[in-house]
Amino acid sequence: MNNPNQEMPFLDHLEELRMRILWSLLALAVCSAIGIFAAIRLNVVDVLTAPLFSVVADLAVDDSSYLGVLESGRMAYFNLTEPLFFIIKLGMLTGLLLASPLLVYHAWAFLSPALKERERRLIIPCMTLGLLLFAVGVSLAYFVALPMTIRFLLLFNAQWFAASLTAGYYLALVLRILLAFGVVFELPVVVIILTSLGLVTPAFLRAKAAQESGGPPENAVPLLFVLGLATARWRNRRGRIVSVEGV
Image 1 (cartoon, one colour):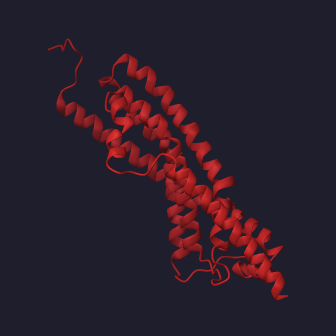
Image 2 (cartoon, one colour):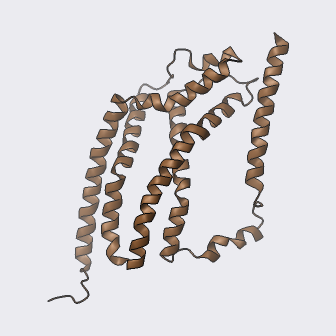
Image 3 (cartoon, one colour):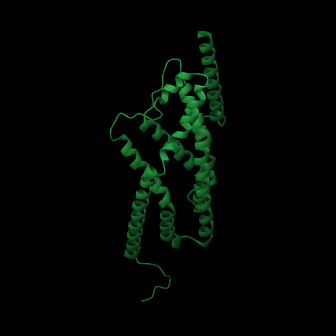
């Protein structure tokens, strides 16, 4: 018997969902294996540690004690399995990024029949824009935010504390910063998609209730950011003055 609305039965939907999940898991496993191989053979760790070496070399010009952060040119670890598990984690993350086009395709192929024509025309450009914004966010984090963060943390209370970095902590911090910037840069695209689907309304985005409940003022975050930079510059300058007077 023909279905005039061309609608699939419920069990057929479940079967299609199961097959797409299996294909997605297979793609993720293959791409994760490729990612682990690339992390070892392409020296991805060198790319992740490059900002740290650059900042340490810059700080060592004025204070040679910073060279002790990386005495041997290699990062220390306190657990024998730490390098192994980090490479596996890095490979799986790389595999997720490599498999993301296939994952997005299967999700789109499963959900698109339920969308209207206008929604389908909007979501495809938004997905492309989302990938570009993710790349922009990761690039900004790697070339700008990450060196600034490393410099600030190394200089913070440097007159009392001496840094001794371990591989697991540093590399995990780098991955968190890169992913955080990438995800944050995709938020406008997520809002556009949710608004087009009717799941988010402009009244919800204005969030007047949050302001009436005693939330922070609009200019609080930029002000705190400026104060943080000013404090870091003052501590850096004070540290240099103390080192000069002690000579």
